[in-house]
Image 1 (cartoon, one colour):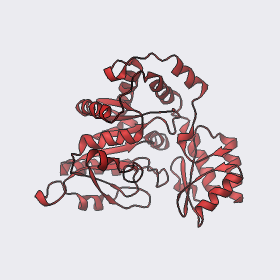
Image 2: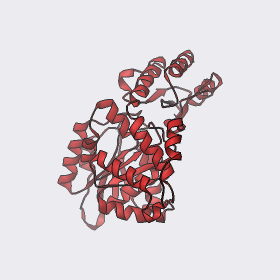
Image 3: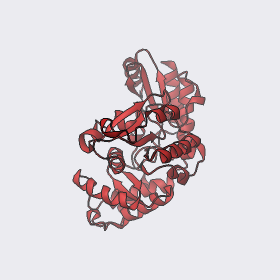
Length: 330
């Protein structure tokens, strides 16, 4: 079975398991796990920020990062199909008391004119105050699309002028970096906080990080514990993430090539596939998913007329070509 449902389905390689087995550990709630501390320092440095905090999930990293910028009763603006709005089960409202307003873009992109008109940083006691704008790079439900660096810089300038903050949900930022060659620190420079994931394209079994200022991370560490995210000898997992960053970054280009191959097989223009996610329109998504599974390829329905394919570490070129042949036949 070739599984293209998500890049979260990867399993640790043998070399990653070896790195996990030899990891030096300590109690991370006490701040004493050396492998976690090394990972946090390394990721913060890659993105040009002061500090980072290891979390078990990307959703937790996003909740902590947005809460660092947005007080209860304030709002964050984001695109309508953003992960923080669609796929985190209302956590930002339920846990942090944060509200959202959204703009709509078919490829998950910034519409700076619309965002500028939506901003309400200080409109008195009758309106919710806009405290931050969140963008997703790459954008999951828009098909792994990359946000242009020029748009992100323009957003930073707009936010600075309005006195609001910027959060970047960079769960797949590594894919954007590899696809465009944009240095990670340039992406980091547009953001006040970020969330990056290790357990998608990079292939680690668990883990994300919130990235931001040292003060923001101090507060987030308290909130992480309050949310049940205080972990003990978690260096075993952090070692997998560090191994992934050191050894699995460049190979993301292979996933991008395989996604283009699958797109063409499904009648989707490969030029519109920026990274490792292919969105395929189909009149009967659930039926297509069932038929594909019967033929040995797992894909997912993300809407009644939308199928999603995601390439990853567990799908090599031969598997991608086989899957392409199956899907083209269907």
